Amino acid sequence: MTYLWNNGEAIGLPIGKAVCVGRNYVAHAAELGNEVPTEPLLFLKPASSIVNMAGEVALDHSLGEHHYEAELMLLIGKSLNKDNIADYKSCIAGLGVGLDLTLRDEQAKLKAKGHPWERAKAYDNSCLVSRFVTLAENDLTHSEFSLSINNELRQSGDTKLMIFKIEQLLSEIVRYFSLQPGDIVLTGTPEGVGKLNIQDTLSVSLNGETLANCTIA
Image 1: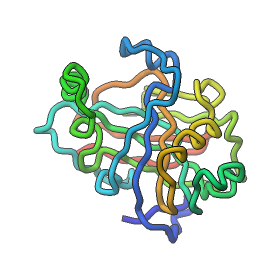
Image 2 (image 1 turned 90 degrees about the horizontal axis):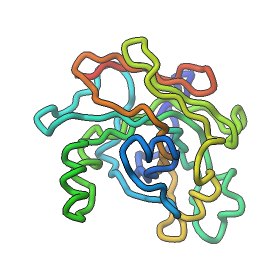
Image 3 (image 1 turned 90 degrees about the vertical axis):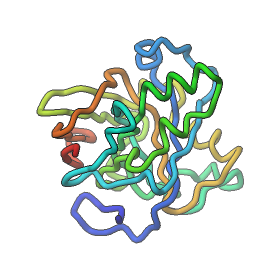
């Protein structure tokens, strides 16, 4: 696969890792009965989890129920680390909307045992990515995004409601591991998460502009 701009042109960046943020909206933490974190909750998805949100997206339904979590997504265009975090905006190549898919039942089992979440979060095709728009066209402090399924609005979020804002998130991430060109950052999901079904049609938008459509297979 290849990352794409919203006009359909390919982006000349490799497919990297996905750094994800859990519980970054108060209402989402509440709907799952989780405490609101006092610091960003971070986890990773590998490159093998990343798939374009276009056409049919195949999921392995033998693994269990796949739950959707729509999130504002950052595409890293230049290396970002502790030494250049003050210039973080110049390292963001684009913005999009991503879906962090979760095997919710598996995640509950892992959490109960105090185990890592990779089986529930990092499986193949568990990170759906839209096309990207440039940062210059959008405001990181107040960007609205949404997910509709079968023409019904299921999730809507606004970066102004994030517990930890973009700069805080990136600063915390690069304390532990650098971000490389082609990495993406999923910044947390608002309330409204739920189960995906075969033949569901998905559409995601950023600031009123549709960035991607796909069907679940």
